[in-house]
Image (cartoon, rainbow, N blue to C red; front, side, top):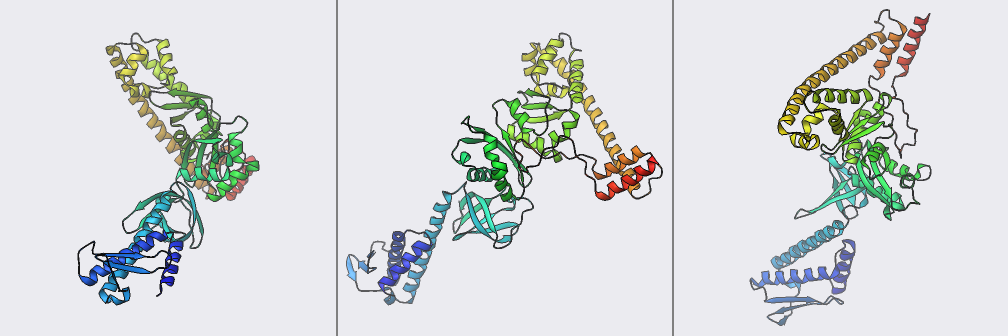
Amino acid sequence: MNNAEMMRILDSIARDRNIDRELLISDLEQAMVSAMRKHYQTLDQEEFVCTIDRLSGEMEVLRHGEPMDLSPEGLGRIAAQTFKQVMIQRFRDDERQSTLDEFSKLVGTIVTGTAQRYDHGALIVQLDRTEAVMLRSEQIPGEQFAAGDRVRALILDVKDMGSQVKIYLSRGHPDFIRRLFEVEVPEVAERIIEVKAMAREAGFRTKIAVSSIDSKVDAVGACVGVRGSRIKNIVDELNGEKIDIVRWNESSQILIQNALKPAEVNEISLCFELGRATVVVRDDQLSLAIGKRGQNVRLAARLTGWDVDILTPEEFTKGLDIMSETLMQVEGIDEEKVDRLAALGMISVFDIEEVGAEVLEAELEADEETVEKILELVSVRAKEVAEQQEKEKAEAEARRAAEREAAERLLAGEGGEMDADTAAAAILSAGSLAAPAASGGEGEASGEPASAEPQVETNAEDEARAADILGGGNE
């Protein structure tokens, strides 16, 4: 190999592997020194010096400062093998360091790669010259890629594992959606609109709270885009994951109310001592506020940082009445002091039991003996209420099981005679005993109108059978 060809190869490696050319030439010089030391069986680190001309590629070897007329080809098999091994190892180290430096700067950004294969559940993605891995925990549940598919993901972490660099990707991390908003919404990238908080259950639903520093820019409207164009691109990238865009507010009460949309909230009581928000909604809004499998209230709690409890007006009033009745058994506790506790967000005997003696002493201005009496009565009453709630829950479950069994018998033609209302109730209960919450929000990505009424799912066969039975009953 002549010098010009060697330099062309070095330039090609430097360009393809993103390695500094000067570093490669230095590696060649060190490999030559190692080969010379191996050839002459010397341990002296300073005995040999090798220099390569950066333009012509001409190599010069000095021994104790004196030039030597010796090329790599004349070193012998062992020394030549040493030259090759050292050169390859140093080139690999340079490439690994270059990859580490390059991708460490990209942590937290979105990259696009090509799906290669699955390895024990982890997706291997090709990123230009290197491979990255997306662990199962960082994938969107139910999402599958075929070999050759385009994969867009967030660089979550880059680790130096010694012999190689591990690049970890994520599509399930909340920051992935944050970066998608920066890509699709210029106002977010320019920091005119700020993402204040986010809560996500990957593959199902995300709530994101936004605010604008410019009064002329509507944060929610800008994120949704004209006819939902901007949010649609993000939803498509996430394969249909629903995104609720919530208007941020410094007031916790207003923020919680916004986060629970599309449900309409009647009242919110905040207990700062417990970090708990008690939200009162009408019966017809309960399923909307809680959401399918509790998803809406769970995400709202994570978004706002409050432990959110959803109650109907009857449950709220009942809890206050029980607390008031229990506390007023203690001498010195009147309605005014009970109202003071209620204003602080303590609306049940469970709250009083949980806050403890110090808070009660301060808020009620009561002595230690009085507070101990209060806690003793509250503890007993809380156990009674818990037992009653468990009993009511068991009865409700038994009633639903009986309705389901009756519905199944009716649909199988074994129901016997029953009136039309009972038949209709039984058939509808077979479709869905618990009405799922309709999806929606202030900035709902689906574009469908949010329904305030709980929806009951029934299949066509059930509806037809119900029509036949109801028709027969009316005759």
